Length: 130
Image 1 (cartoon, rainbow, N blue to C red):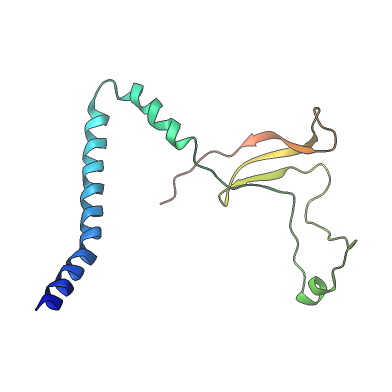
Image 2 (spheres, rainbow, N blue to C red):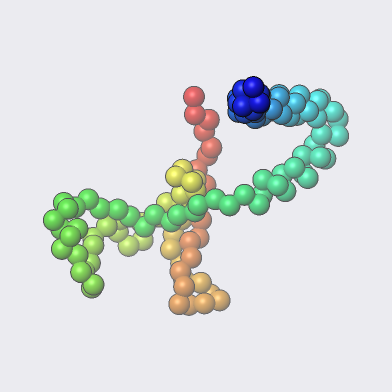
């Protein structure tokens, strides 16, 4: 009989985290709705945004791309040159988490001439996806 009670308790615990998570999400939604309605909500949103500002994102600067058959890829060796689809002076894409957010031009850093940087020339307008 004791084994049956333990099994029943284990089954109850398995379903419990999902229910607790659902309840916590609903409580959070309720709190957020209440916060939006308060006149001083704009002041508190600054504190909440500091949390968001610490989230790391993957930033890539796309210099160009190319397509090649696998045989050419396998033939690459040290010193091989791969021609990209962009020319010198053409803008490069700035991509964050897989989404293009800006374009820029390559520049040499004044503080360290052995390193490159990107000078942003265009910020891509955010569009909401349906």
